[in-house]
Image 1: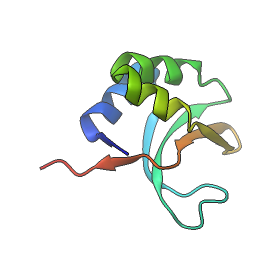
Image 2: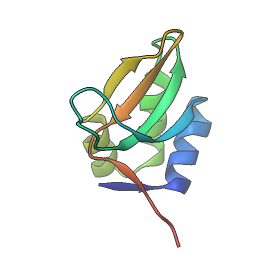
Image 3: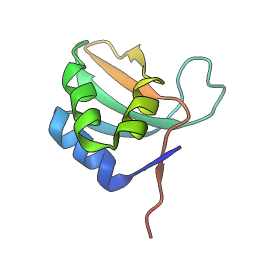
Length: 88
């Protein structure tokens, strides 16, 4: 599934996170997806931003794929199967 860069930027802005396009997490075997970096392990604002920024079906599908990896001081929240569509 795809989200647009505009949607990703809106989510990042509302959640004070940074977009990580092309993340490949554990068990993804090189497949890439969209992720957002957050401070610590507090990603409640990210999930709220997703709900506010996407239609209900897309938000539910995205949140159903939510996975995290620790980055030391921060966390990346990533969504296997979701990429940022190349806008024309």
